[in-house]
Length: 375
Ligand SMILES: NC(=O)c1ccc[n+]([C@@H]2O[C@H](COP(=O)([O-])OP(=O)(O)OC[C@H]3O[C@@H](n4cnc5c(N)ncnc54)[C@H](O)[C@@H]3O)[C@@H](O)[C@H]2O)c1
Image (cartoon, rainbow, N blue to C red; front, side, top):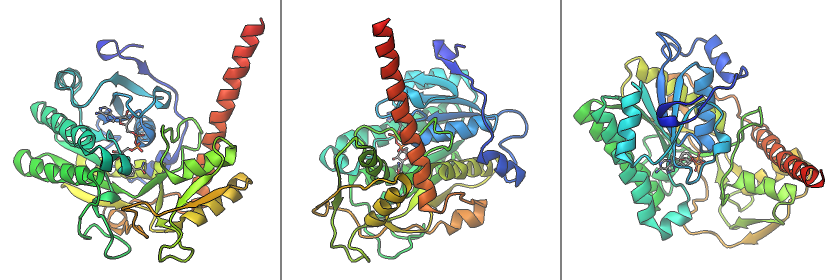
């Protein structure tokens, strides 16, 4: 099927998932009533965006994905209408917004490598901030008034208290976090000036994959701990580097808070529901409220994979705080968020399932091309 300007429409039957559980609990009051909701998912060919698209399609929303595939992959798009392009392209945005009366926009598109942002700050300010100005401009022009934004724990900078609540001071220590905080400020100004209602969701460390194994984390280069550890388990890399073993933590390695990607998507649905119901703008943390050290993550991955993972100890990286753990009480209390994956082993198991499927797919393709070469 072909949609807007010849863009491809993919409609796959969807299997029941956590969303149905949400509905059973009757948590979504507006998403699935009064006809299909039309949602623009910017960055929907990326890791978290792809999981969001899946849950939105399951909720019978009409989804349009806008993505320039700079860090995402066409392989992760399993539903909705796909439009390839950048969110800074105002002409394209006018065509997309002109063709679809969107109820809301979800914005996942950004560059997000902290180290790279230190060396190439303007790349981050251009993509994460300037392009978001163009997106918000288009929303104002087309009178779309609901926005959900992927923010980050990096807006807080060095923590002064743990767990980190939304009231913690925001003092980002790198341009990546600074661009996200600048967008949050811009959103507050847009609410005051244009009545644009937004939810900024500050994710801690997203991890895991959909249980179907059809979508998962696919970054190149990969900078996140769990997929790197799993690559070491499959032999795709020889070892992993642990940056810093002299932090003031129980085993000397950094402690982070891992939240399952489908739990993040569930939080977006609840935020969407609240905005559709006339809710006010809000900012929420999204984490599991549990901290795991780098060594603990490696240990859990060894249990899940049954493989020994080779580790090389390296110097601390500048700007890595010792401990980052979220308090997510606010979103639990106000929106009824109930994460389904609070156990790290369970999260790693879903990521491992995805990794194994990827390897099987590659082997399958190699075998097929060998067979066709022989025939
Ligand atoms: N992964 C995490 O642990 C984490 C933690 C905190 C915040 N976040 C934020 O969540 C969002 C999604 O993260 P992810 O891990 O899925 O990243 P990702 O790189 O997998 O996805 C980002 C997607 O946006 C697209 N994109 C980037 N710039 C674009 C542009 N100018 N126009 C159109 N498309 C563009 C990319 O092609 C990609 O598909 C990001 O905004 C990131 O900053 C992620």
